[in-house]
Length: 286
Image 1: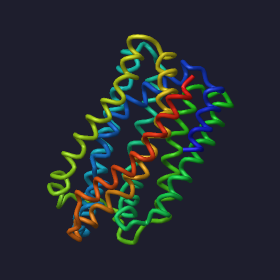
Image 2: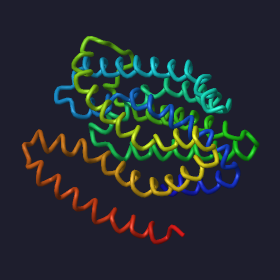
Image 3: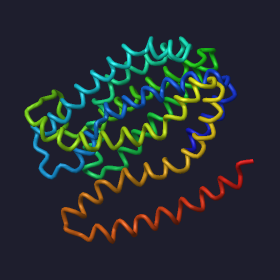
Image 4: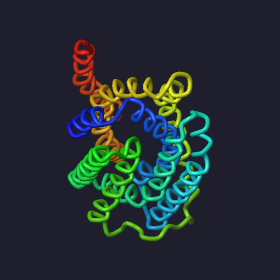
């Protein structure tokens, strides 16, 4: 959170609002397909009670297939999205982002296995390394005048860094080759998780897409900067909690613990931290 906050301040000085807006619209559009690409495969790997080699390889196969499909869709639609927003820069950003789709399944499967084993130290190191590399790359590209493409290239470099460090911590049981023998079992879980994530992502990201078309890229950037500040506090907190809560609740369910009591206690702890934090943010808005 600290690294992203500092990076956003520097980039806000190096790039104009219009440049940030171009990347934001492209990234939000790709984000809708990115939700489909992720498909809840990671959650499936974490919660599967009997994770056989065939099921793990099938999860990897489903993730790889969807990643290639959605990456191709992003690349194919890039010119049309750029024309719709009357901004060719959006096309350039989407073409770079589409490449990152192909790399993600390699690292995501490994990180899901680490979450299943509750190896949060390794996950933390991987995410920290990726964040630092992406931030340094973004600032460097912006400094040397790559404009909005500096954010696109740094995003791709950050994913490459995440894949590299994930391979370093790769559990021995991580498959190298995909399979599809158990794809129906994987799909039965993922289709509901993916639909839920897609609706949630769309509800958050629609504002950027509407502002970019009805107003201008500067409006997108100003709204996005304010939203990003709130996101540094809320979603980052919830992301940290969710990384631990899913395997924790899976374990509790397997141990036949009282999930209702655990849920209400967790909600109370989250509220105790988040409500005062957002009150302070509201008071400091001016």
